[in-house]
Amino acid sequence: MNQFDEIAADYDESIYPLNERDFVLPTVEKLAELAPGKKILELAVGTGRIANPLAQRGFDMTGLDISEQMLKQLKQKKGGEQVEIVLGDMQTADLNEEFDLIYLIFNSITYIKTLEGQLATIQNAAKHLKPGGLFVLESFVPRVHEIVGDEIAPFSLEDDFIGFDQYERISQQITSYQFDLSGEYVASHKTVHRYIWPSELQLMGKLAGLEIIHQWGNWQGKPLKQEDDDMIMVFKKNT
Image (cartoon, rainbow, N blue to C red; front, side, top):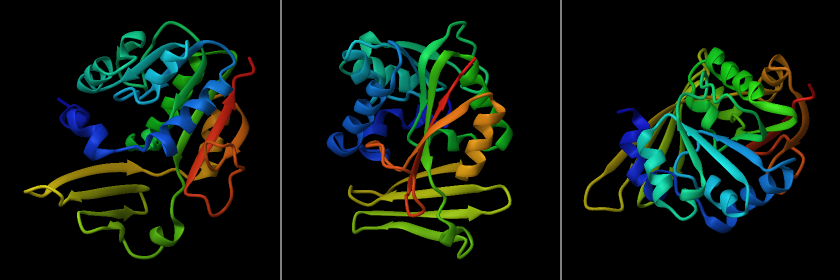
């Protein structure tokens, strides 16, 4: 059992809750708008919060994830019966088919802890794209003031929730600690990420043979700016 199997049952509600109106719907709307065809693959599909609504809109959805328990959660949710699921590692999985649109969102690329692994993931996505197909990748923009300042920086100090990040600058890794104080006992969760600079992501796309066509700061398509917390890169496979 991997770390994602262990948190699958609580993932949507307590580990990584997403507001439907502010996060899920804008993401689904933009991906549906971008798709040059009906065949879509989500890498690190998780519990299907984006894949399932897209399947309900008539897209031919495939979801790949390394966690069997996450995929079980996906199938139990509305629309899950319409998503083809694949258990595998997005760095190396070979689905033996091509897609019109592939996306990897919600910081999922940062769970791969090495530069080589992140590049392999993007190259593998490119391999599974049809000519003219699009690859969409979303991740947080590293907070420079935190990285060059204190090694430990809080990101949430609420009465019922505390979260802080510990930065390691050489490896570009962040260890994130989250403590839920709302119940009768303290629930804790720890994750390790490798953050990516925008220029680094652009180069990875180029090395994978992809052309970058959009850089956004949100799912409404706002151009990426210096102050943005998130980056959404849209790449195209020309050949």
